[in-house]
Amino acid sequence: MTEEKISELCKALGDPNRLKIIKLLNDGEQCACKLLEAFQITQPTLSHHMKILSETGLVSSRKEGKWTYYSISCCMFKEFKSYFDSITCYKDRHDHSECCCGGK
Image 1 (cartoon, rainbow, N blue to C red):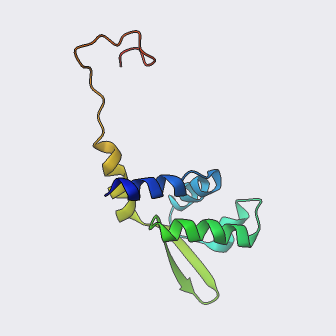
Image 2: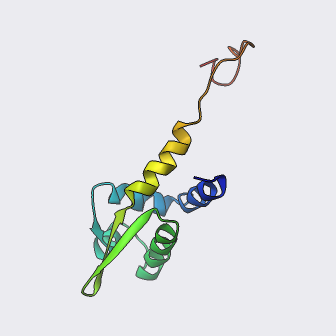
């Protein structure tokens, strides 16, 4: 995954409402109407958030009649997580015990 894509995903997740949506979808697929019940926002505002999450590939959607159901795109989150898992912290030759994190 490129740094440009990681940046795009971070921007999409940089809104508290979108983070809450992801948290709600972590429990499984949800109808837009159920997601809307969890917020104090309008349906067009929810649609805006869902569009951003869908366009970045973080969320998948499917239509069933007049309802849209959303779920987390597991493949995208696995790649996203893998990027951050590849970042490691290590102690170099300098003593960082007085650093902000106490040398941990």
